[in-house]
Amino acid sequence: MHLISADPCNGPCGKQVSPHDLLPIGPHVRICYDCYAWHLTAMAMLSGKAPPPGCQMCERSLDTLKREQFTDEPKMYLHPLEGLYAVLCFDCSQRYEQLVRERYKNTPYGCQRRLN
Image 1 (tube, helix red, strand yellow):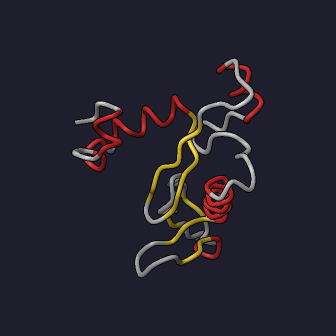
Image 2 (cartoon, helix red, strand yellow):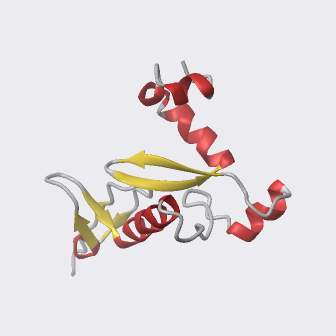
């Protein structure tokens, strides 16, 4: 009998992965390679180097989001999560903002999005 160990990713996905597939990014924070790749994608988007391939949370592609939003440049949002950035579409961003509304409370962004 073999026991397989799995630890949670502290990134946005939260999935259980092998401890060997987790990258330490802080004393108590470890993320999977997928979340790290998305973080790099977010950093490229932030620097204007490349558009994201889609939404990290719902996994809809950029082409799908373009069709759904009737635009060549769909709205995408960056949210800080556990020291990383996540790239979210408009719908997922709204859902996420409701989960963490305390984080944005009394900030200009929170006021603009009516999260106060």
